[in-house]
Image: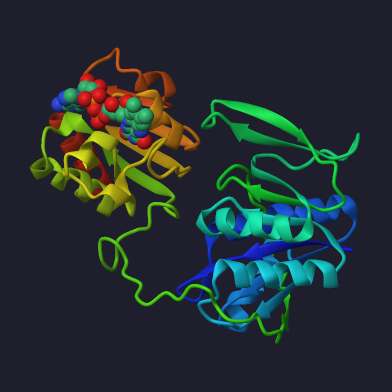
Length: 318
Ligand SMILES: Cc1cc2nc3c(=O)[nH]c(=O)nc-3n(C[C@H](O)[C@H](O)[C@H](O)COP(=O)(O)OP(=O)(O)OC[C@H]3O[C@@H](n4cnc5c(N)ncnc54)[C@H](O)[C@@H]3O)c2cc1C
């Protein structure tokens, strides 16, 4: 018996959201007194794979097929679920998890609960909590199938890290022909830019900045903090900032440790994408701006006066 968790990789390392999923899967495995097994697809070093052990995986089964598509990875995970008698399969509810988890559920005829935010409760069967209505509410789902696929909303739970190292086992199975081939991979914004989806810190700005020529101070603040930059939707729509920076209901949903919102009103559609941030700092000249209700720290003031002061303070700390 086991709990299986899929671990995605980027630039030769396991990604943060996957490692959170490993910790989640390991906690479920501990509750059920079974093993937590991570499954990886891609050409990673043993050292990179062993990191899954720090987060609670006993072993990592690694298939080194490079650039496998979502269907091939779903085949790999499903086969290993059967081979290791797993009844719970965990993904991160991130870009790849959203694509692979439903395929695995369909292959295994399993229930799927996506965007879970708590460990399952096994007291009376199997129930698990997930976020609904763009994070405005929660629902408890009861699982009625023998196998269940769960995808964990990134940044929902605290993570415990140990010195344990996972045993790496190679899987040589043939995943078949890829239905989709990536011909070119170009990073938006160029090298050195922090990926918004993975960012721990985000500095974001909205229409209150008046024009694209004023983003220098936002970029400077982000750079000095080691943060990614983001924006509200109208800012991307008018072309002041690229669309991949737009956060919210119709943009990227993020959950960083710190979200700094400058000159953004805090409309419900914006909050839907950022309200899972651990700490929210709002800079707005209107004390009635709705964003202040969601803020942990609020500065009522003109961005053109406040942000240079924040910058000076951040520089003084560096
Ligand atoms: C179906 C639908 C989906 C949507 N999806 C999204 C989404 O995903 N993401 C999103 O962001 N929006 C989305 N929107 C739009 C959303 O409703 C808001 O219109 C938008 O978020 C407002 O952007 P903003 O706060 O930058 O601009 P504004 O609403 O114009 O607010 C600007 C703010 O800046 C403040 N300000 C002005 N000058 C200064 C200054 N000098 N210093 C400090 N503060 C200043 C103002 O007080 C104001 O609060 C969606 C709308 C719809 C209908």
